[in-house]
Length: 275
Picture 1 (cartoon, rainbow, N blue to C red):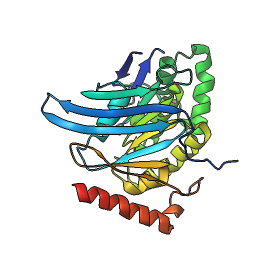
Picture 2: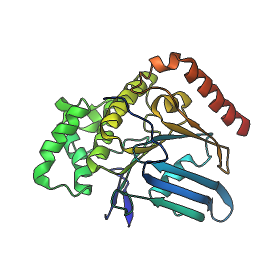
Picture 3: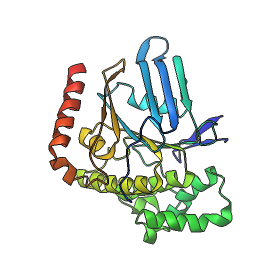
Picture 4: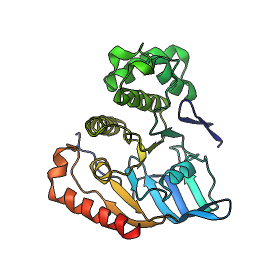
């Protein structure tokens, strides 16, 4: 399967009860990294012996110090990069390679296109017939709380609203695996939490497999089923934690739980120990 990225749309294209339980080993794998090493120019080693499996419907976060290769892992899963050594595989429902979608810290919206047209990019990449675009766009705008803004251009939207549009475009593409590279990193704390609620609500509905890269330990705990902690470069998996907090989660209320603070302290100590 060939995968390409549109740097304007931020999309990868290729041939191709409300309680939510965490993914478990019995569920189908959607991505697998085995003994992955990555170096650039044969000199700078970025990743060393990375091994993990992403399960269907799992929300997996990757945290670690700057430069440890978190974003590189996303690019390997998306097939934008090939590992120096090791294997990276993705698995769609039919056994072929998975369709993968990417969401960046920068929203990468088309500035000359309104919200409707930006979301339609995802539908076009997914091969959805044009006669079905209007209904699907309206559905996504309702889901994202943007029903009144379909005709607005990116310059008229706040940072949080722009990221909602970027998320809508990703959902329009309907990938098997959603890769999110610090999508809320540039937002203020209040907007980040509000978009976290939106993301959790949408994930609960659609149960996509997600790999979420962030520097924010508390954000990772609030959102995730499982967290991988990376060492400093060359990045290795230092530790792995299952987040056994109940779902659905109140992203603010959960921060008052002792289990939340204990896990946050463990992850912080792991990161500091390796920097």
